[in-house]
Length: 329
Ligand code: SAM
Ligand code: SF4
Picture 1 (tube, rainbow, N blue to C red):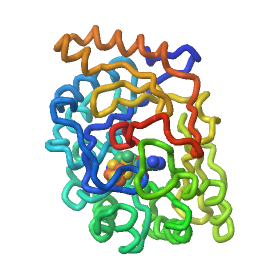
Picture 2: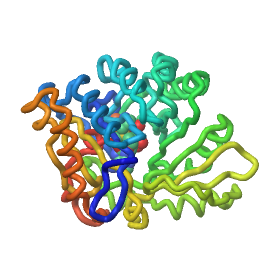
Picture 3: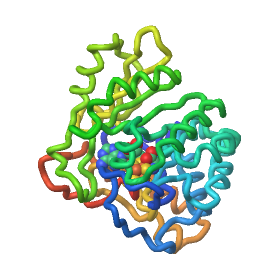
Picture 4: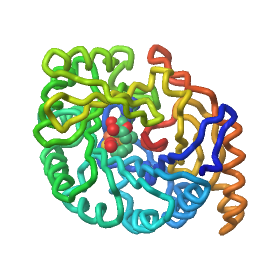
């Protein structure tokens, strides 16, 4: 039973942990071309990440998603995953990656106890992939997806951000690719986080309703009853092993059942992706090394400031100037 219950009686059982703000890609909706990354001493060490992961699991969190930045470019990330993978009470250790390191690491991740993996893929066309990610690594990512399939994860899901006039003509092709590989795919609406340099968000916004409409012309989709406690809605593609998900952070419907919190690269515990309510766990653990009961009490107390819901508006310039790579998407 989780000890993490907020003022709206929501039970927090899911932690998203950003293990680095660095990345080998520069996706246009996530980063500017010349990103400045955090100085090393501001970033949680692997030992601190493990300590905090243990605190959350002892408080009742049963699912941790490792994200970033690109989690697989963090030095010695496998040691963290191996320790987290051993925590009793943690039933789901999962990861979100851009796929660039998977040919090297897929098997080691599986062996460390990572059960499921999300791999980002916005285009199957090399030139366009490069325009969206600002790196020419499509072949490497496609090989990484195959490596993940061969490593035998319990589930693999592609994450796709659709931007109007950039990749909206590939929606059907990306779903066909997922069906061919017998894996799942989720479409994520662009979120107004951070400052992007090369497009206006209100011009590129492409809603999941539009994606669904397009897909329904080619596929029969049956709504799944699975509820993730998050902004995702799933459909089974009839006669296939593929599910299509829609992650619609602009909708408010999911806030009532929100079960998650986020740990930023800098050790801030964020209570809602779309709000600034947070506490500084790094400060607490560095001022009181090895004091597990103190940090646990701080996490319990933080539940009091978990906001009722978020406030995203794509037509406004973001009040939230955090970048996704620090927050953990
Ligand atoms: N680097 C890894 C990756 O790309 O999968 C993990 C971190 S990334 C921040 C996690 C997810 O957030 C990716 O699927 C990415 O497409 C998505 N993302 C990044 N910026 C976004 C934004 N502004 N709006 C919506 N999704 C975004
Ligand atoms: Fe890197 Fe992921 Fe952000 Fe792309 S979305 S720049 S891969 S952190």
